[in-house]
Length: 78
View: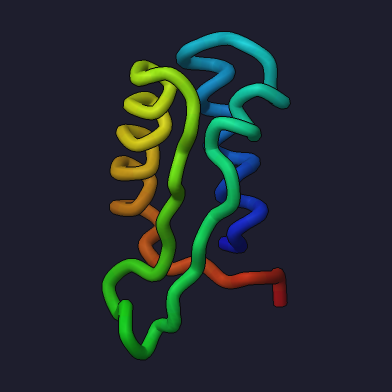
């Protein structure tokens, strides 16, 4: 899975579970930061959400859940 696909997945889940606009959730999630697999062998990505306390909690909680299923991301498909 790529970083862009992870953002799309997170946006879809947040809209479904919490409501609101896709654009707003995409802004709240921000960019997915990727780390080298050599130094982060178990999970190589993170997000730094913004927004209200409840929005940040929603994004971080979902990110924690998705890290269990998708611990390693790539920067692009291929």
